[in-house]
Image (cartoon, rainbow over all chains, first blue to last red; front, side):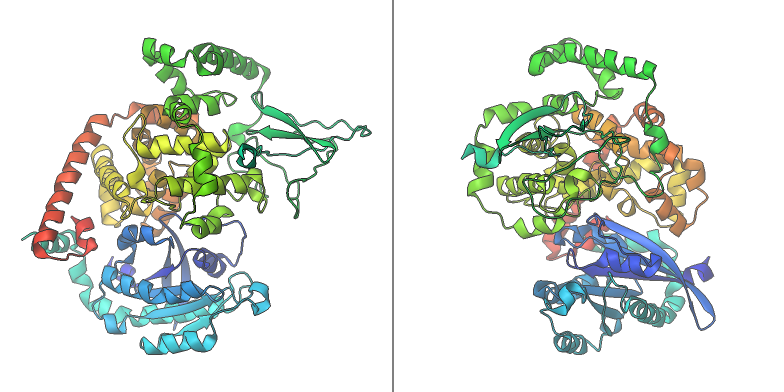
Length: 206
Length: 422
């Protein structure tokens, strides 16, 4: 049981509505792009087997709804994440400005043990739109922000054309894996989930 | 002024030229309203409602007068107007063409319903008061598709709201602005993208959808626009006009007949949280073994059931099933959503209980074809009793939530996470 869980890498995709989270996930897992995705309600989920240094892992990817109001449903998904992918649309400034909110919201909700070093990966998506002419966020600007937040790896992608998606998710998987060793030590404790939660809630009530 | 927004909501525009010798046959469901509008020297038949197109062996010409832009390629659609999947819809078997006997049965059913409703719904209230159990039984068997739009408005109380508020929709639509406008626009093409009515960019379907959602976001600025509302509005627009659809949304969210559902969309989604809490308990009580398995695999209803509540099964379920659920939902209230949810889990119990986390999550989002057959699933749903327990669980939820809120107030700021874990 414990060894099976250890082979599992949990990844959460966050970002504003319409930046292409569902498309990126589907492009990576199914190598497909569709113009007909529905807006994600709640959360969606796909898995993919990945091999890394002779070990086989299951990458469990959670695709979330982008509208702010759905964040209250996100808690259940954030918990136990090994890597958080922040996505923005290079053609929409606001989606870039909001990366900071998404990052902070995630750290609050998921409360990882070492928030300073929790692995994030940033993706600037939709580089294909209008041949790059409608772009408003420069690569330089995005990289500067990533550098200021502890050198977050940055990729420019096009889910539509499949550009750089594989490379980005390879990096995501590697970073999720880096987060795992701590998990191994602390895994036996986490099995008793009910007990842990009770303690916390009673702590809050007194 | 009235005409500006009272533009007919056409699904199909047909240009019939006098010299055309080809018989253009579109077989449209019985209740369609045809309006002939003289425009640019040609008659455009504007048809409202859901429809089937019989295309084999017939030549047809579609002209898109109102909207420039590409006309969607004429791909085959099912009887509700959804484009058929390339590999064939998985639910095709369930909704295949009916035999003559079935057809006759349908006709008898429609006649019965017409009698019950009266002209334009005039006898409805009287009938419901006199024979509520007959109405309930007939609705559970499914409202005839040709009368669905009208009956939905009668049972939801939206018809009364419409009559009491003349001109209000027009006012909201034309004179007010909404801060949600961009959010709505972004989602328009992502709402029922495989339905012919909503497929065309800036076409009549998308325009109606935008109008209803914008009007609602102005009508209730606290709720505004939330993803998921589009699927409610979209489903309604396939059966009624914009203004009717708008008032039906008001009736649902503000609670004209049943408890208001605006909490599904308010900040923090309080009603979704409550429903998920209730559903979690119901699963453990009705299906203890499966409940235990879910706990072991760390599955909770927020991972699979939030869509069920937020869109009342209209998001990803086969349309013919969603419609049957909506028939009952509008008459009996939200408890049918719990019942159908439990019925799905009951139906697939023996398979689900064997699956590990990943496969379980997948299975809970992709139920097998036979489980989606309304005539198999709904009888199971009707047999599950939940009303009393739902009330009790609601009180329990409120009590627990109140405690957390109080402790939050005394302890200062508390994270929302703790609230939800309680």
